[in-house]
Each structure stands twice: as C-alpha cells, then as structure tokens.
Image 1 (cartoon, each protein chain N blue to C red):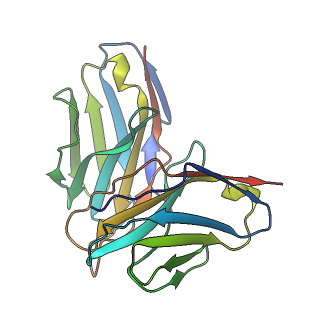
Image 2: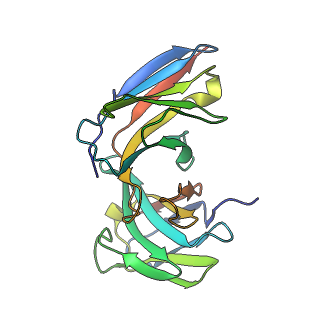
Length: 116
Length: 111
C-alpha cells in the first residue's frame, strides 16, 4: 500500500514568495497532521485535521501559515510570504481513527524547504 | 502528556541486541508508551506501543516496568539499517492526538 505522499521533496525559493506544500494521506485514514522539524526546535506539530476539519492549529507559528484539507485525500500547507526562518523539513502524517485508542501516525518523507 | 527522558546517544554492535531505555516517572494511568524512530532523511516511523504489558512485534519488543515509570525498547538483532534516532513518547490513549517528540536517542549500529 502507498504510504503518505508529500510533494515536492525539495523546495528552494526566495524570501517573500508563496510556498505550497502538498500531502496525500494513506487512503482511509481520517486524521492528518502537519509537523515541522528544525535543528533548534526538533519535531513540532503545527496543525491536525479530523475528517477534513482542523482540530488544533495552536502550533501554527503565525498568520503567514495556513493549512487546508479540501477532501479526504489531499491537504496543503501554505506559507505566504515566506521568510528564511521558515526553512525546515515539513512532514505530513496520517492515522486511522482513535478507537479503541489513538492509532499510530504514519509519516511521509517530508519536504525540505529552503528560503533564501 | 508525561515527559520522557532518554540518553542522547548509544552504540551497539551489529547482530547484538540493542536496548534503549526511557524514563517516564510522571506517567498517568491512561497514558501509553509509544516508540518511533527516524532514519536519516526520512520521516519518523512507528515501531511499537504499550500500556503496561510487554509487547512484541516484527520490529521490536517493549518492556514496561511494573510501576510503569520506565520502559526499554529492544531490537533483538540490530543491523546497520537500525541506525536512527529513537523517540520514546508518552501520550493518552484517547483524546488529544498530539505527538510530542523529545530529543530522542541517537543509536549507532557499528559493524
């Protein structure tokens, strides 16, 4: 079975440009997560969705970041305008439900974002 | 979620068992212990989880002490491909979906 698919794998762009990261979760999974990883802060959760609805966006750093999930098979994380401090690896993960307990999250291979 | 403490790094010889410890002395009764690992340039990979009983799957074994204040992840026959950062995470069984990653243990398998 296909895992979580993220695109692009690498993105290099100039400061001020809009950046869109894409994620296709595992089919049938109803939770989708966006994480960011940096050397300084490690892995941190930005936002997660349940059944396409944002549940917790408390980790989104500021208004320049936005995430959407228009359907069960696609999500985007957008940064506008981008800044050099946004450079990081962004991971998408998905999981299947929360019964009987929270199920393991399955991660994509990430998008390595560099803002010049 | 309860905080965990792991050694920053460990080494193990190829073919030997790798035992990775984790302390979670403030764990609550409804919190599970999860283990993930992250191989270089890849996303984190789920390994195993448990509540109070020892667990085993095709990847590893998880030993949880009777008081649940610590646990050990065991890779029975470590290979070079097991070189990775291993994260021990404690989280509630239901409700909040958030995974809080600490610094983990950087395990190096030596030939």
